[in-house]
Length: 89
Image (cartoon, rainbow, N blue to C red; front, side):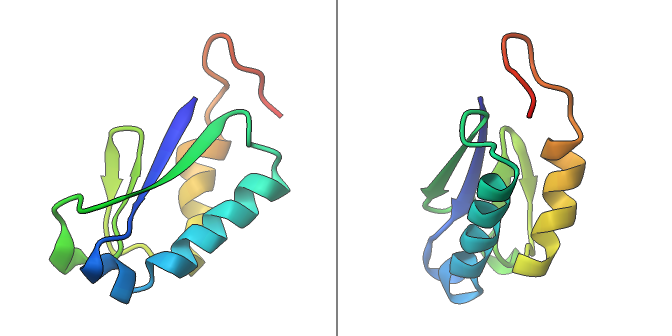
């Protein structure tokens, strides 16, 4: 299972975390990734001045905008082979 965390702390929330979450949810639904991806909100990834912060497993991305999500997930998630024991859709 791959975990995607989106910071919903005050700074990230005001900078558009809700739109980022919506974009991620749409991609998870469109590509039927519910069994492979866990989307979670979290408070403070300690990058408050750098825009909306997203963590995919242990890798942290800052300044993420809704329009960045398709490319980010394609590079970091959709193009990765399924991990051992997972099925890829």
